[in-house]
Amino acid sequence: MDSLELRPIGVIRSKLKERSQAPKQGSEGAPDVWVEVHPFAAQALDGVAVGDELIVLTWLHRAQRDTLKVHPRSDPKRRLMGVFATRSPDRPNPIGLHQVTVRRIERNRVRIGPIEAIDGTPVIDIKPVLCEIQKV
Amino acid sequence: MDSLELRPIGVIRSKLKERSQAPKQGSEGAPDVWVEVHPFAAQALDGVAVGDELIVLTWLHRAQRDTLKVHPRSDPKRRLMGVFATRSPDRPNPIGLHQVTVRRIERNRVRIGPIEAIDGTPVIDIKPVLCEIQKV
Picture (cartoon, chains in turn brown, purple):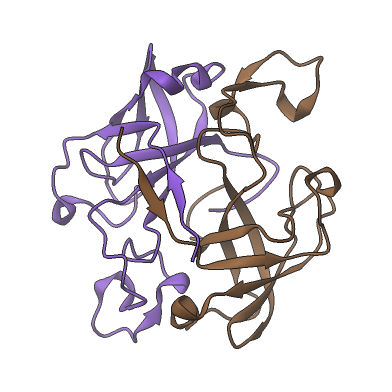
């Protein structure tokens, strides 16, 4: 099977150091973090402004890629479901999808939140929210 | 720099064959398509149902990965912006983010739409929309 190569465009710097400390969703009490955008991609931030709503895509590097079914929200009372019907980080391509607000910008560092991704998580893309549409 | 390997979990089968035929967003007149989920990942569909709202992540394989600035919506009258402030497919990691509705399910094939991704586009993840949150 073909594979496709992702190139991280930045990294999360968070006070959350372990997956066990992280809430399941940003809206569940997650902190603000810094995204350090790598120098090769810094120009791509031009136009991002404080107050913007962004979608940040991360690579959840501690996830299990061979997991195809899970108990939703790790609740053993809920029946096993396919990971495509859940937001489990454990999935074939562990891409995290986070809606955040921009708090501050310092050259190639962007303060965003709230976000549950832990310290050291690679960032793979940043996109604006499209206001005329829709829920993540 | 580290790279990360994506493994496609499926492929788009669409009547749109060329990027030039595709609308810029699914909401701008895009068709329904089939997603053929590869056999290794078919179990991960368990729990996905007709009528569900999903986020489909694709790999926009015809995009330019070395583009860091664009004129938004290819409009030369708009100033050049960093790609992280736009939804341009041309970006370091050309990941497409599409909100769709499930129309039909046939074993490992899922009919979804509307979606602007062209025929042959690799699918890299499928997630449910979280209703309590937020706009893409």
